[in-house]
Structures are given as C-alpha cells and as structure tokens.
Image (tube, rainbow, N blue to C red; front, top):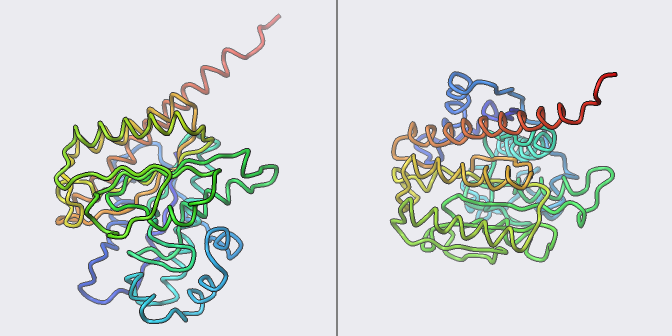
Length: 319
C-alpha cells in the first residue's frame, strides 16, 4: 500500500503552539516499524491549477504572497511562512496522489491531510487549502474523465464538521459529502453537507457505530461513488482534549473497518487522510492514526488477493 508523507515540511511554529506538528513524523516512524507492506513516497506539490479547482484566485494569490489580512491569518491558526505555503500544497498533493494510487491498488493513504475547514476564499482551524475538495475535482478532470462520470464521496469522520468542504461542494452534484461530528463542537456555525449527523457530547462506541451504519446506508441509497475520500480523524477518541466524544481504540478500529468493508463490498477505491487529533497524550493520537493505517494495509491485502483470484479465473486454459 502506498503512503504519501509531508512530515519533513515542518512549520516554524512559536513555542507552546497547540498544533501537534510532531505527530506526523512520529506516525511515519511508527508505521514504518510496525506495519508491513507499506511503500513510502514524498508527497507531490499541488500546483496553482489544482488549488484553483476549489479556491478563488484571490485567496490562492494572497496565501502564496503572504498577503492575507491579520484576521484571516489568525483564523487559520498559523503564522504565515513560506513553509506554511509549501506544506499546505504538499498536503493537498498527497491526497491527490493517494486518490490516484487507490484506483490502482484499492486503497492508499495520506499520512496527513483532512484539511476540511478551508473554504474557497479563506482558511480556518489549521487548514489552508482543502485537500479533499481539491483532490475530488482533480480526479474528476483527469484525461478522459468528466465530473459527471466520476462521482466521489467524501466520508468525514473527524470530530469537527467539515464546514469548508461542505461550503465548497454545496452545489456540486458530482461529490457527496458525509460528516459525522460533535453537534456542539467547533465549528459552531455549521455548513450543510449532503448528509450531516450531529453527535451528542460523550457519544460512546455503540452510539457512534449505529450512527455510522445509518449514514453509510443512506450514502449507498443516494449515491454510487467511484472513489471515497475518507477523513479518519483521531479526535473522536476518548483521550482527545478537543473531541468531547468517548470512542475507545476498539471503537475506532470498528469505525475504520466499517468504512473499509463498505468500500470493499462495493468495489470502491478509498483514499485515506488522517485529519485531526489532539490527544492529551500525543502518543494516543499517533496510536489511533497508526491503527487506521494498519487496518488500511490489511484492506489493501484483501483487495490484492481478490484481484489475484479474479486474474487466475480469467486466464485461458492451456491447449
């Protein structure tokens, strides 16, 4: 399974900044050691043409030049730097690459991404460019494709609603957006996804999984995607300081497996992104993400085995 990384593009954040930048390098080190069968690739850089599929020219230009007004820069949550621009481009490029790889292999992962709070004309919540919106439209416009012929579903299981994604794709019938999130959590002004499921504070494994099953059933009844972009946030975990839900490691494993089973049963490729995670103990966040990647690698093996079996059946009989 191919895994695309950006962790060596590090933002120069001030001391004490609450964004857990270290989790990305820790995650890559952990899965390199613990998850067999991964192939690691530096994330490509999303160019302006790709960014403009989801963002306005004025916003892209202002980000590139460091000319966002102070209020808009504060809304992102990072100070501007060339490194911020480069990492944000690479994070979008990693999701684009994971989508393309998933078409070949059944599944691929971006070891970052999930920047779902970025709108067409502004960023927010540590999100500069919206990688899922960019990647979905980029995949729909590859040579020989048209958007209507390549529907994409974005399944967002970060604890925070994907408000930027919902806004960008609100009037796009070729992309179906699903968000399960804390109803009373950030962002406090929600946007309308194609399917929103708000969860109560303290939501447990069983309540969450029941809600997820219902959401996936609705997705299957309304939409037939050719690709799923899955935001596998670690922040529904009970140890997350911003999450306010109570999912255990076991519950999160069942969550991931349900998404992968849904895709496998329907032969839909999946591109996985890590999205949020702000554990009181950063090692807990890394453990949640690593568990997702390990389950994704198992899914890749299952997909490869089915391909191999299908190929053997289709071989012509020898004379």
